[in-house]
Image (spheres, rainbow, N blue to C red):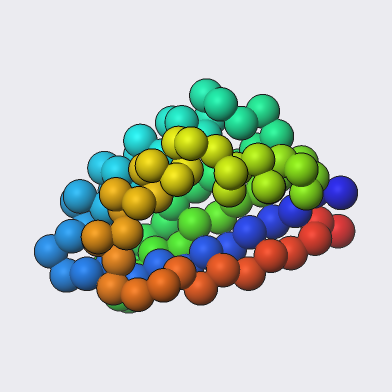
Length: 96
C-alpha cells in the first residue's frame, strides 16, 4: 500500500531562495536514487511566503524508510535545517 507524507515547513525570512535551491538538490537526488518514491514536490503558500508543504508518496513502508536512511536525505536535509524556523510538522497517511 502506498504511503503519503505531508510535511509542513516554516522558513526563516530571507532564506526562501536558499531553501528552495537546497530543496531542488534533494528533489533531484530523490528522483535519481529512490525507485520507491512516487512523488516528491515542494509547494509554497500563496498567503504566507514563509510556509511550505512537501507532498511525498512512497510505494510502501520500506521505500519510506529507505528515504529517511539515505545519505542524500541526511546530508542535504542537514543543510536545509539552517533555513527552517522550527521543526517540520510531518503527517503520514495511507493511500486509499
